[in-house]
Image 1: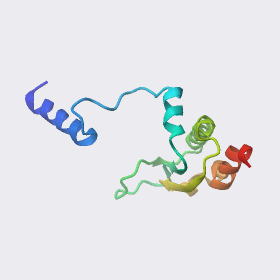
Image 2 (image 1 turned 30 degrees about the horizontal axis):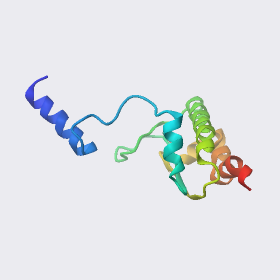
Image 3 (image 1 turned 90 degrees about the vertical axis):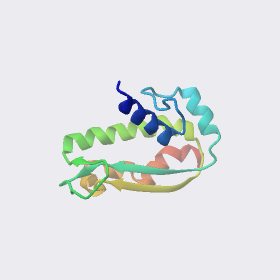
Image 4 (image 1 turned 45 degrees about the horizontal axis):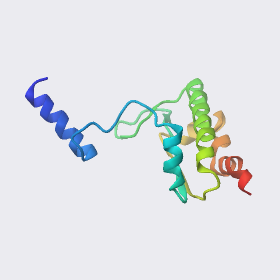
Length: 130
C-alpha cells in the first residue's frame, strides 16, 4: 500500500472511530454481549427504514432502491425476524418513539407494512408485559 493510501485509511479510521485501530468488524455480536448491553437500557426508541421508492430522486442521499414487490416482501420478512430476535432482549421496557423513514414507506403499504406498524408491532411484541 502506498504512503498516501495508508495515510488516508489511517485518517479515516481516526475520524470515524476516534481510534487508530479498526473498530468495525464483519461479525455479529454474541447474544450474551447484546444481553449485557440491553440490560443497561431503561427505555428505547425505534426507527424503521423502508428503502423502497417508485423512482430514484437524484437529490436524495438516503439508502434506497426501486420498489419491487418480491424484494419488499423479503425485506419485511427480515424486519419481522429482527423484531422477534430483539423483543427477547428488550423485554417490557418502554418504547418512547417510533419513526419510519426511507425511501417512501407508503410503497409497501399493501405488502405488509401494517403488520410492523407501531400499534401492532408494539402490542404483539410487548403484550406479555400488559
